[in-house]
Image 1 (cartoon, helix red, strand yellow):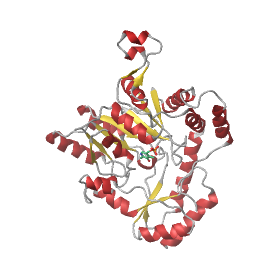
Image 2: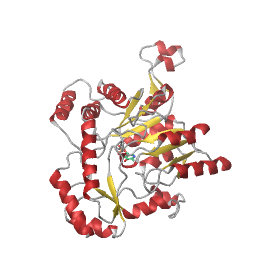
Image 3: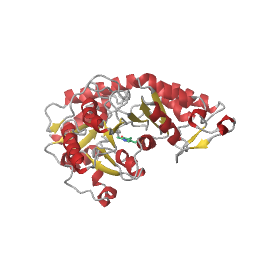
Image 4: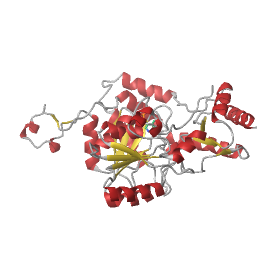
Length: 381
Ligand SMILES: *Cc1c(COP(=O)(O)O)cnc(C)c1O
């Protein structure tokens, strides 16, 4: 079966990890700060704080934004559940902003309407988690112009988008218009550290909080401790209720090694996305918008005439590992129990009913991609 996504591990990655295994530190050594610096160098952000998953990175981003009980957090329904769960972890309430049917990202006009409505109701959100679906950046400039007047914290969920750029050609992760950007290094994403994540930011205040929450809420930094005890060299203090969300040095060195090939990976993804775009002109499908700045995490088509169940099963039977991204978050039983209902975010629901992700990853061979194209043509003919 040709998978929908696949990581790439090379000898240099293996050597880097083995090197750390032979060193003094498996965790809390030099590799995490080095990976964080490499992420800053790549994205252009001032700071990066590593975490042991994209999900924990989303959690500490919400905590750093001071999301808590009674607050609202908004996100896109067309995402992985973690984009919304992070707000619930903090005791906040979640709501969704429907997507644009063409970009499949949070609709800027729906957001504008929702802000107007919430302003009247006094229910403006503390933070918005904006998801760059499939690796294509949302219009963060326009979104920030809508949210800035109200001091809403903007968190980019860029789990799909590392290596991509926004419409103004800024690197994703630079936080040009936003407070924080969350990255994931799960094996299907742009680069992998096995499990891992990070938050980038240009704010020293957010950096400090992210660091605290990722490591028990404990610090040894005398500048953060207004007590004379801080002069004692053994002293540390817990300032917040934090977690152990630290990335290990083994994971960090793998991520750092992979980061060196990120641009090659994105170029390879783009090339394969372009191939699909050119090879599938006359089929009864809706293709993703062409976005040369996308990181092309996914290539997702919509079936405009055929039954998704039939096409999915037939392709799977013929060795094509198609997938579906995403079941709208508000349709999961857990969210239904919170009171969400089918029919609330219809663009995301209609898109979901027809969506099919084709295999796309940097090492997808020409032969395998041709097999995907031939099989798709056959099942739709
Ligand atoms: C993968 C993913 C996450 C979670 O990242 P993990 O590293 O798997 O915890 C969050 N949001 C989106 C959109 C994702 O695709």
